[in-house]
Amino acid sequence: MVSRVIPVDEFDLVIFGGTGDLARRKILPGLYRRFRSGQMPEGARIIGAARADQDSAAYRKMIQDAIEEFVPEKSRDSESIAEFIKLLEYIPIDATGEGGWKELAAMVRKEVVKAFYFSVGPSLFGDLAERLHKYGIADDQSRLVVEKPFGRDLDSAKALNAVLAQHFDESQIYRIDHYLGKETVQNLMAVRFGNILFEPLWNSQYVDHIQITAAETVAVGSRGAYYDKSGAMRDMVQNHLMQLLCLIAMEPPNEFEPDAVRDEKLKVIRALDPVAQSDIVRGQYSGNADGPSYVEEAENPDSKTECFVAMKVNISNWRWKGTPIYLRTGKRLRARESEIAVVFKDPPHSIFGEQDGRRGNVLVIRLQPNEGMNLRVTIKEPGPGGMRLMEVPLDMSFAEALGPDAEDVPDAYERLIMDVIRGNQTLFMRGDEVEAAWAWTDPIIKGWTERGDKPKLYDPGSSGPEDALMLLHKDGRRWREIKV
Ligand code: NAD
Image 1 (tube, rainbow, N blue to C red):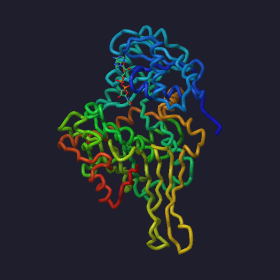
Image 2 (cartoon, rainbow, N blue to C red):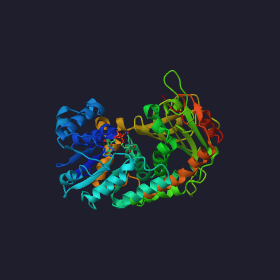
Image 3 (tube, rainbow, N blue to C red):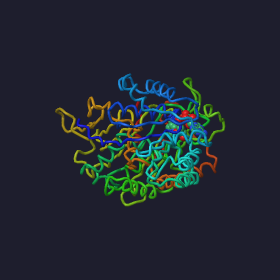
Image 4 (cartoon, protein in one colour):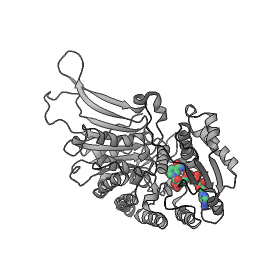
């Protein structure tokens, strides 16, 4: 495969929260992988900034350990790690105080691309933005990267947008949703808009329904008390699942440019119907021999927070009216599996009579595990004995399609960080998109908070509460199985 990677300019990337879990597990290992594959420009520099009082040598050692822990052995080697950590500097800084800022100002170069990654809680965004401005560190070309959660409701999201807007233009702000950095998610756009095959069928005339699933096997564990303040709707649906929904449902943008794509996504969110409470099922896992229940981990016996949610969503526009989209996400389920399944209608007339074996076309876009796509088609069962139909998958696993290059498919974080340096906002959420998503989510959460609804219990290792199955059964449909 010939690499056609767009070159990246020389940069200074400052990671606030550079000693935190996210920086050590995702951001720096991702940057290392880009470095190792030769896609980091000469003169790139990464500055960790956090509260810990340590020097650059100690920080380099910390990140070396993190790379050894979080990058698989086959994707690292000690020589390149030693070269990579030479790009790192560290500066102790207090986001809410004045210590460290003058030193940072002296360190950051004027003439290169400057990006500031806010890998800290959102309560610090305002302090950081203000000091970057006050100490003359950022200029009008600098970029800010901010992590989720971007608010917990419409009001708090608006407040965060306003705080950032005091010192930075929207064109400088990169709100990360790592789902958008996944290879398959971008491939969804390539498949939809790069082929003539799918788009003519991509509407309510031919698509029966769409299922979007993000199932996890992990429990909330030690993050329980923290998670209990948000829940699956805020943690997964408002951001990740909504983004997938937008990409699957949006109109073709006139060009693959940031605002063209984001304008179309925004229109989808604005066309979403309010969801009836009867079209939502919330759940909490019970305990078993393998682990405690959700409420025990949340340290809140009366918790009414959901760690599972399934819902039916309708889009009121010409393309999708009458084609429901079912969303489902939860913790401690049967398997770790994220996918989008576009379930097409049956042909209008079967010339084969009521033959068994024909279940219609389904296009599955798999996000994890094993990113890829699969199109289920009907064929004749081989051999004599009349016309019996069967289904076969036309399967495209990226690992198989790309062969030895598959290992080099960048992980979501590394791709997104490089897009920041390139100044490409296409795969980042715009402020108005985030606000529109909260405006749709808020009344749903408010409804069940006001009524004091308690989520339904489900068995750990299952597919969620029974009622979630009923959500589709009552429409004469069924969920795709979450496979182990
Ligand atoms: P963490 O608690 O592990 O690290 C926090 C970092 O912020 C540390 O480096 C700490 O020194 C720094 N910090 C805290 N207060 C500071 C201050 N006043 N001044 C300067 N630095 C300060 O947190 P994390 O898990 O790395 O998460 C960081 C952010 O990313 C959070 O907003 C979190 O919600 C978000 N996030 C994390 C993950 C993840 O997998 N960890 C995933 C998605 C989003």
